[in-house]
Image 1 (tube, helix red, strand yellow):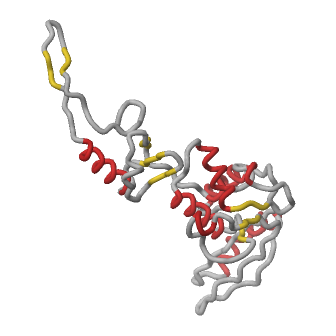
Image 2 (image 1 turned 180 degrees about the horizontal axis):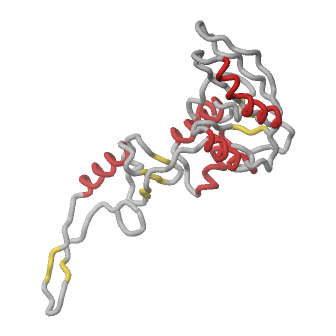
Image 3 (image 1 turned 90 degrees about the vertical axis):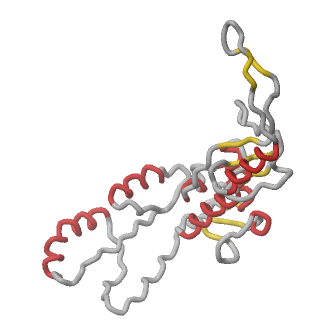
Length: 238
């Protein structure tokens, strides 16, 4: 790889003078096939990320066409968290309706524009499927995870103003209270009453299952809110 980050396929057979008086020293040379093999292995195992035109290759074997001298190698890309797909991060991808809409291909185009290079399809779909699983975004039609840009590129997505709460998981050995909504003041009251509640249920393995719901708006600072939630419990997020 040369200084610009492009894939270089061979060395130079000339020699250089390394000191005065000049002492010729040979510059090593390697066959381009050896470089191709090394780059292929590094891209396939995730050590490097290769971009060639609109092709973005990461953790898969690049083709012979993609192993071009004009291909560019980068450090491994970072996973995309669910909030990176929402209107505050990608405003041009979403409509301005009360319930914003977009498509998979529009989101991918905006991710590409934001980072200045095509994102690996697998990483893009992993992040978007995580956003769907977490309830940030919903499919307008169909169900299940998105499998490819070719198959699901036209899939329409929406951010629902209100998402119905999922039913509680079945349990054979635990009893649960009914589902209820607590105001901020009631949450504070719960915290104050928790010692007495725990005392009254000693030995019962008391667990509080909490969820926060909001009506999303384009300028909502979900990143800051998620940082606060993470201080309470690391994996707690919208």
